Length: 114
Length: 113
Image (tube, rainbow over all chains, first blue to last red; front, side, top):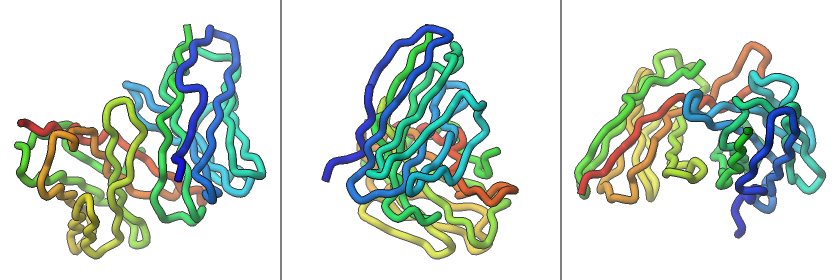
């Protein structure tokens, strides 16, 4: 069974640009969550999608957005990039969408903003 | 706003049991404790979770105190591959009824040959 797949794995952008990251969950998983990881702030929750609906949202500005498609694949977008957006962006999927259960993480997309 | 407290780092000799403590003194009655680990440059990996009973799986054991204010993750026979950052997490519900995993800073466990 394939794991969670995130693309691209690495990317470099400049300030002011926007970026879209993609996540393909494990087949059959309907819940997808996004996290940002930086050395200073650690792992921080961005948002969670279940059945194409955003169910939970963390404390990030509106520049950070996401969506989920009918096949459960998810994308997140960051507009007007800032230097502080440089981070590892992790996607995780969950089989049931229930509020208990393990998360399966991808390898992440490492974004560098210059 | 993490609800867990862990020591920042620990060492353990290879082959010995690694005992990683976690305090979660404000845990609510229906909140689960989860443990994940993250090996350098990889995504976090689920280890185990529990509510109030001790749990064991092929990777580890989780011991939760009777008052549920703390727990210990036990890796029974640590190997070099267990070197990682270990996160103890309580699934938090905010004022709006949203639930999320709040990871905190974790414990960096180093297995010594």
